Length: 331
Ligand code: NAP
Ligand code: G4F
Image (cartoon, rainbow, N blue to C red):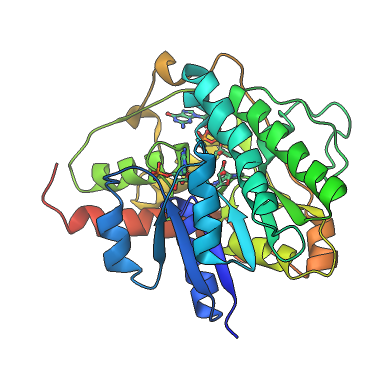
């Protein structure tokens, strides 16, 4: 019998990669989509017709119950969230409702439909929960035992979601695992995130469609991997006999300046500085200065390892954006 999976956040970056992976493994894939006229529906129906779309919203408990009753999933991947850290400072209460309490709503939908023993659950936890204050294990990288100190309404909401998932595991015995994922990027990354903002701008500068890019803090550092590698880790977590929490990361950290340097090199520009203006509008009230993950447990227990390295990631993204931008006349 083919397994059934329900993915919330199906229109997002990870929803794309995970649904491709599960489809290739023979799963029947259900995707929760919000809004009466979601602008991403058309593209999804055209590109991934195998996905069975279910309408619903993380803030609407009854829609989640309906989705579970309809999909009868063996596995639920809770990827839906308001996921932009900067935006979370502008809409902190909404982010608490969606990114935080929304996770409780999915867990409750599983419990109320009697799925606590039959459904395996994945929660999209994040390195933002650590907050970049590397005070407890300098240089070693954050692992599953590191202290949390979130620095944004998004990070705080995700920490609630993380702990409520662990609580449902302990209280009701749900096979629920949290993947503490460090930044993962790729050709499906939203244009509002810094890597894709850069790769897209570099492509447009190369094609003469744009002459500069405006960014905020250039000094922060991130542990950047490729999203396609990370969804494999999500799936592996749900295949284990026992639920647990795992860090997925590369074990390397690079600054925004490093990303700019490699991206501009792709189009033959060695000095990127004349093309970048700093705009305080993109700065955050509190910043996560550095993220570095330690994926040793995932490598040991799950046999997971990232495949795409940092230069490979930058190359893949810039090449993709040059292709997309060349194919359209829009300026
Ligand atoms: P993303 O591209 O921003 O996708 C977020 C998804 O959540 C979209 O499908 C969005 O739908 C959906 N969503 C937002 N509000 C919703 C609501 N009220 N009800 C139902 N769905 C809603 O995020 P991603 O990069 O794929 O990340 C997936 C998950 O992993 C997120 O939870 C994110 O916080 C977490 N995470 C990401 C990273 C990373 O580096 N990418 C790292 C750690 C953790 P619309 O398209 O309709 O807006
Ligand atoms: O690309 P970002 O917006 O990603 P951020 O804040 O690290 O969050 C992402 O990764 C988290 C995992 O650690 C996820 F949980 C979260 O959902 C999301 O996917 O910003 C990265 C860095 C920040 O330091 C930011 O201040 O880039 C800096 N930055 C500089 N200029 C900018 C910009 N970020 C954005 N989005 N836009 C800018 O113009």
